[in-house]
Length: 431
Image 1 (tube, helix red, strand yellow):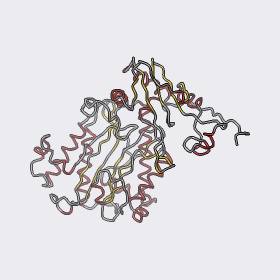
Image 2 (image 1 turned 180 degrees about the vertical axis):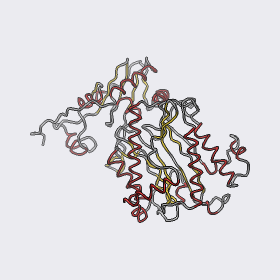
Image 3 (image 1 turned 90 degrees about the horizontal axis):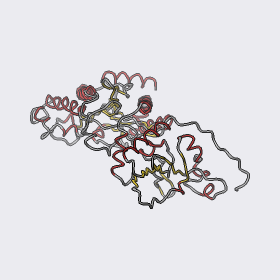
Image 4 (image 1 turned 60 degrees about the vertical axis):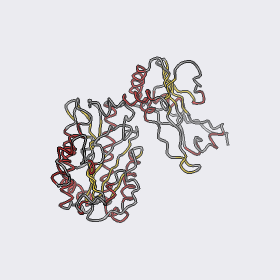
């Protein structure tokens, strides 16, 4: 078994993130000049006995290295970086033939140490040679050290040009996934939410790495459950379907987009009234995005519109101004969640940043955030008219903060009620 094999060392091109990752490591070192920094990639997690979930590396590890192989550890010390990785095993080892997680015959070809080094421009050593770090020097492990985790996330808040390109690509593929779903609407009506989930996943895997998060394909009253990911329900004529879906690209940057569609292709008058209110609120939130304003500016602008809309519908027991008072927020019964979160390699990006920077800080050029207001009327909400119960509407786009304002990275998907109807009709007829 171990004889008669040829060698297949590959000539690997340098990854476009290699130089960017080196600069990122330099900034990280500046924050902790006297410490040893350890950033693991993570390892496999068991799904069902002898099968594992598909591996996805730790975000910070990949951000600072570009590496996406499992069981690797980045060590930064005295300005020097070493990536301890688990390269492929030779054919003269038991691992090659027998190991179900790492053996090439079982799990496929892993890159060699040289291939990883050539691609990422970093010194690579075998992970079995990872030191124990038993000396007196302070060692900060990302999985345990809150300060290191905080700084690593804060360094990711502002995206460079390459990252913006990755996010734009993820949004563009996401647009195709939404279009795929509408083109297969006859199947959607037959098989329900599952068909949309599967259709979108197919596009994500075909052109990206994966979905960035579990897709929300929420027909009818399921749309009032914010994180409905069971996707087991039917898609019924006369109702709405809320689709919150995003593609994760090959370099792990993800889109996060939501559209609420009329199952029949045309909104009823009541659905249109509610949808247009949410779209107006979203537009107000998007218009508020620019450098120097608080991160919460988009949320506050959107809630202003929704609160007044709810007051006009005579749903609030007080005036819109009273409901908008931070001590009240009565409108939140039907809006439920914040309007924005940061977006990048994680769908809720940079969550370990200092609260004074995010979410309490200001926006800066290069940040990317979602703007996603919604209205949700639960099936058993006796404070709203019966015709509203079971309706959930959310509209979400991915917004880049630019020097002079903002750019909608997901603008290729229509947002106004009239444009949504035209778009649905066009793609259904092409299906």
